[in-house]
Amino acid sequence: MASWAALSPSIVEYFEGEDFYRCGYCKNESGSRSNGMWAHSLTAQDYQDLVDRGWRRSGKYVYKPVMNETCCPQYTIRCRPLQFQPSKSHKKVLKKMLKFLTKGEITKGDGEDEPMDSTVEPTVAGDFALINKLDIQCDLSALSDDLKESLQSEEKQQGITSKKEEPPTLIQSQHVEEKLGSGEPSCPVKVHAPPKPGKGADLSKPPCRKAKEIRKERKRLKLMQQNPGGALPGPQPQGGPSPCTPPKARSNQPKSLEDLIFEPLPEGALHKLEVRLVRSSPPSSQFKATFQESYQLYKRYQMIVHKDPSDKPAVSQFTRFLCSSPLEAEHPPNGPECGYGSFHQQYWLDGKLIAVGVVDILPCCVSSVYLYYDPDYSFLSLGVYSALREIAFTKQLHEKTSQLSYYYMGFYIHSCPKMKYKGQYRPSDLLCPETYVWVPIEQCLPSLDNAKYCRFNQDPEAVDEGRCEAPDRLRVLHRKAIMPYGVYRKQQKDPSEEATVLQYASLVGQRCSERMLLFRN
Image (cartoon, rainbow, N blue to C red; front, top):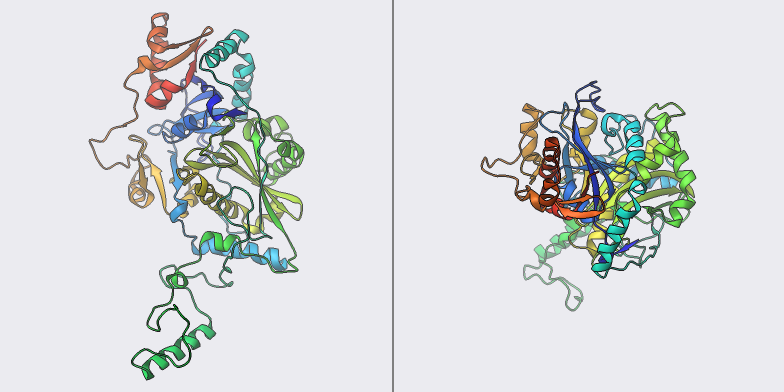
């Protein structure tokens, strides 16, 4: 595990996109295209910058769709948790979970009309064989010992030392009141009860009040009419609000996401739900202890929900796809207590693992990678529920790390009905595929209704501010040595090599090209 001062540079191996292949969304046999690279290692900041340029990882393979050529353009989408208010359908899911935990109540027909639950995109071309092949060809262990020594010597010259430590598992309990903001369960805080089951509230109107409160309000108004001076009969509390003071603003605001999620269960509740955060790469002891149970859950999910044959969800596929990660485990002093990197957020119901959300925690966001769950509990709408929990978790991390304030949901695909549900988590933004600026989704939807591929930035003169304008400063790792591209280029005679490197630089941008090491053999 790397300390903040001991980070090794990111090492990537770029593969130029050459061909069209089968699309995992519209099933077009030759409609999808992307550029990709194998990430031997990535710092959290480098991956954050890559995600903000439209990249996304699947295991250690990092890919970027060729947006103006692929059949189903994939726009990076992020939600703004600090301004998020759950919708009517979101509240319905949270109330459904509360009723199940409290009374074991299962509403008939629940889960039948839910959208696609997991926030995952199919692996590039849906081809796990590709990732397996790349894993064999490009595994970091394949790098020569001399190459590793070169990196180690560079670190020693900078006086870098590393420390190894393992953070505690983070546990959130539905059974216990919690205070968000510490990264771990803290002292109890008062939370409000969720709305009663029934028709969802109109968020544009104040919440309904109980009949007793209405009667009290009418009595107070009547007394005020009888006493124009404003003084009500009886003793008045010192320093209390005057009779003409309007009710507290809080009472007229919709309940927060935390109020709804962390509603304390009554004594005698039938079920208990715990959410545990365990580091998956490098694997923590908690991750190792639950690996088999997690794999069996994944296998069952793939077979029942995605109709995979029994031999397809192999342990090797599960490990490469959802456990292996190029992200370093980082613990900067101003970062969250759990640190940056890749994690599994495990949902335990009465001691049984029923769902796992795979997430990356980065300097500015929590990035959702995948969700798999026990199909027997699909009536709980675990896809929606886990997304809401991850939004609340992002707000929790924000309390300690102020710049960590976004929840990335992967790709939004307007032309794919099963992927449009991501736009229901508001407010949210889409990434402009040309200038890489974030644009509110409401401004993007009219354009997407008319065309699959759109430039969202309405300024025709705007350009990619992070574009690579000095490719000679790009760093290359070649034959034991780290060198700028300007030096490496003079040693090469193959003209196609320059085209590949320049394409890589244009896609990753100037900052990443200068920080990351492009491995060339």
